[in-house]
Amino acid sequence: MLVDSHCHLNFPEFVSDLDDVLARAKENGIGAVLTVNTKLDQAKDLQTIAEGYPQVFCSVGVHPHDAIHYTSGYNGDTLYNQLKVFAQHPKVVAIGETGLDYYYDNSPRKDQISSFQDHIRASIDLDLPLIIHTRDADEDTIACLKDVGDTKARGVFHCFSGSTSLAHKALELGFYISFSGILTFKNATGLRQIAQEIPLDRILVETDAPFLAPVPMRGKRNEPAFTRYTAELLANLRNISYSAIEIATTNNFFTLFSNARLRS
Image 1 (cartoon, rainbow, N blue to C red):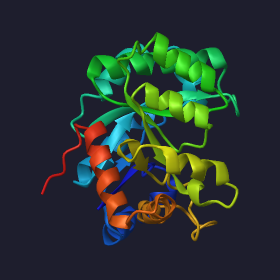
Image 2: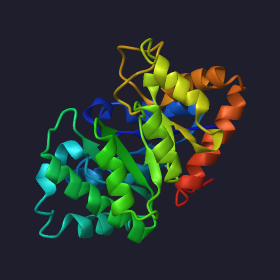
Image 3: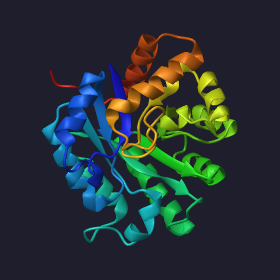
């Protein structure tokens, strides 16, 4: 089996056919799915989805794009406390997605950093892994993890598209690297080189669905079933079998997200 370690099943693109989407995922060997939170006011929606499907897990967090909306907290409480409240749900296995995005700067950088720091603290206190989004913010991302995380933070750099330097710094901090459909794009030569070099026991695969559909599905709505295309390319790049990628990335997922337990 494979695991889609990052998607957004609560987004409007899936509202009309979620049962079919998850059925296709199963048909394509996707045995588990992690649907990731981006706004706290949608956290309960993700939890409801996860409750309805034994193979679906969820996270709780605020995307850096939306950090400005939670600088004063949520539901009359601090962001840090609210993360801890929502994380008590049994299907929540991670904190995030969180991080820093200086490419779009949809939220002021000070708000992004404050939010990221709250997520790091909650992650450590709850012993749940972080799901990190970072774009054009390598130095501040690593600095926050070192200064606030103090070597205790753990998690994954999702949808990785950064530099070799960032990948090595993430690995040095004990983080995993997750590859999405971007790996299949024609202009991803540098990223494919990184994917060949990352230790196999630190790699995850994901879709980030409904975005970033991989080749040969470019232009279509992405969905968990398409995880296989990224995995197939990854196996070819590393000159190993598809089965080896299945086994390694699935083991890695359940090692990192240790609270995720499939029910028979």
